[in-house]
Each structure stands twice: as C-alpha cells, then as structure tokens.
Picture 1: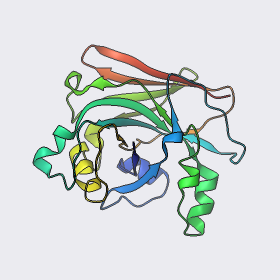
Picture 2: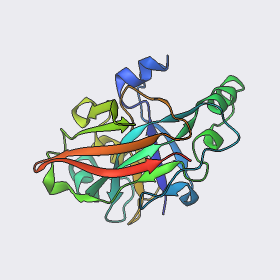
Picture 3: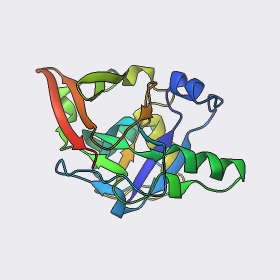
Picture 4: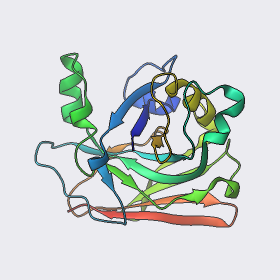
Amino acid sequence: MKIICIGRNYAEHAKELNNPVPKKPVVFMKPPSALLVNNKPFYYPDFTQDLHHEIEVVLKICKNGRHVQSDFAHTYYDQIALGIDFTARDLQAKCKEKGHPWEIAKGFDGSAVLSPFVPMDQFESSSIAFHLEKNGQKVQQGNTKDLIFSFDEIIKYISQFFKLQVGDLVYTGTPAGVGPVNIGDTLKGFLHTQDGTKEMFHCAIK
C-alpha cells in the first residue's frame, strides 16, 4: 500500500506559502507507518516546534493500473475519505533551504490522519465541499472544484511513474488556511454529502 500525496494543488494555498502555482502535480509520498486511523490521538513530535494541519480529500485506488488514460481515470477510485497531512513546517523549511527532500517533515509516524471511506456516488466528484475545525472554530474550508489538477488528472499523472494498486491512497492537496496546532487542540474534519454535513474524524493533539 502506497500513500501518494499531491502538494500545492489549490492556488490560494500555494500563494499563502509563497510557492509558485505548479504547472505539473507536485508529488511526494508517505510510508504506511504515517497512517493514523480510528480517531486515535496524535502525539506531538519532539523534532518540531511548528506543526501544521493540512486537511485533504483522499482517494482509495480500487484497481491496478499503469499509464492510465484520461477517459478511464475515474474508474480507478470509487471511495473518498478525509485526511490530514501533518507537516513539520520548520523542518520542511530547513530542508528546502538546503535543497534536500522534505519527506522527514511530511512522512513521520502518525502524519497521515485518515477517516473512514464514503462511496463516490454520494458526491458530485467535481464539487466536493469539506472543512476542518480546530477547537470548534472553522480554520480550513475547500471544494474540489478549485483543484488545480482534478482527481482524474492526478490519476493519469502519477500512474506514469508508479503502478497503481488496490488499496493505495492518494491525498489530493489542501486548500488555504493551513496553520499551527498545539498540544491540547482537537481537530475535526467534515464532508458535505448529499445527505448533509458529516463529521468524518476527530483527532486530539497530545
């Protein structure tokens, strides 16, 4: 099982971090040990003093494939979840300054919160609204209609480099509003389905 992540996939988020809007998807990966499921608490790591939340829609790959073409990309996922891409922003900045890869700032244990999955037929895939609350206050909200690279474009692109396999996860990018979390905070992620707004996960920071 692979965890493939797309960075800078909402224009306003790229701007808030003073990054250029990408011409191609920005791809990085997290190891399976990054997964944090079943509303388990997240323990603040001692190697960062600037941990940020990044809420994202997550695709689950439902069949194997390589070099997927646009017309068939939508058949490679049939469920979505919400997740958090926890980021050690200070560590990431140091890696970027040196021109080093920044997986240690993104792929550490517990850095990929994941909710239960929901069938795609509960959504219009090109317009899925979601938001994140920190201590009861809305801090991030997004809609997949604002993605720079759509789900299908992401599938087509990443399948050029990595064979997609059943159960792989694709974190599709975070909207603007990322920010710090601290010990004692509680994060809750919400999806807006045809049946109303649904709480998908909660995560206590310990």
